[in-house]
Figure: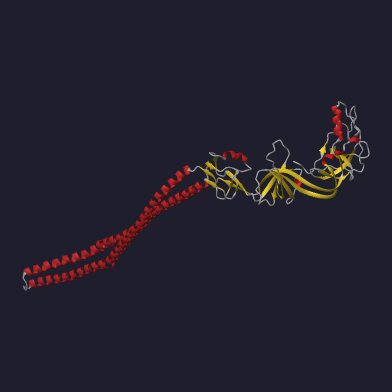
Length: 511
């Protein structure tokens, strides 16, 4: 990773301040610094960028998952990297068990349809029988009521009237027979009739008396026994018919409900079987994975590569398993990881140029479209304290290009452009004890250490806000470090020599 601000830090080899070294065989005269190790501070334009390596991917990718609610075994698989068209078969899973289940369901559906037809027929028969049963019960009740009314309003009054007439006739006949008998007795006393006539009249009188007693008894029996018993029988018949009608209605409803339940049960079973059949048929369809759109086939989910080993002939997959990713190559993006020290310098819509080793000479343009708000570098170790943020860069005008997703790409993100600023190479600025320095070759024989105030920088240059002038020649290396290295190489002890400082310089560390 290259950051926009790079300051090379040197180690302090004793004492406070900059060091020069003298010793046997060690030259400290830096007046002989070669020209190729010097750089004249320049005034001009400084463009600041962040350069990061990342990978090229489609901005939008369609992930194809196994949607069936069970596991499956891969029996056919398209080769990864193939270009496919919409609707093309990508993968086929074993469906033998599902086919057997489907066949059994179809047989059960045929049997249940027959059972449902039978249940419907039984229901129709029961409905007809219920109508007949209720009609008969109504007729029986009406008949019982008619019998009661006929007896109560017709037969009973008639029978009682007949009994009363019989009593009246018997009374009349009895009175006549009695008077005739009494007259015969008187006439016998006067010898107008014979004794046999009196005896005959006596018999007629006794017969009339018996008839009167019988007529009275018949009325008494009618009132006390015959009529109440007949009324009880008629009322009982009406009650029985009423009860039979009520029971018949309940019984017919119960039988009808049983038949309806049988129809509903078979209809429900048929519905469930058909639903299950449809589910199995849909599941069988899901066991054939087709491309929802044209593109290049990538196995699995690029963000979850640990499951790729399952995507093979004979491999087991389960519901929700991502089998393929079909990237939309019309719009591509580069995804990079940016160091936490640089992330605040990024903004959306910043311009970016992208190059790829796979396509030499091809330079693409784009812009920052997404900046992660939370650091997360899946590749860093648990002990790595470096935190990085994922940044997405959307490329422009790639719909006519055939780019391969997954290849490495280098993205240069434009941060800022400053005109008419003083700058030097970043390797010319050194940091020590909270201050920054440059070694300047002026008129003195040896380089002079000058305190500077650096500002913005890019991968190659850093702006110098204070401490240098345009044309100052700065060393591209740290002569202190080189002298110390040479002294140590000759077994000598380095001796510190103070360097000149620019009194007007005010130094602050770069954020």
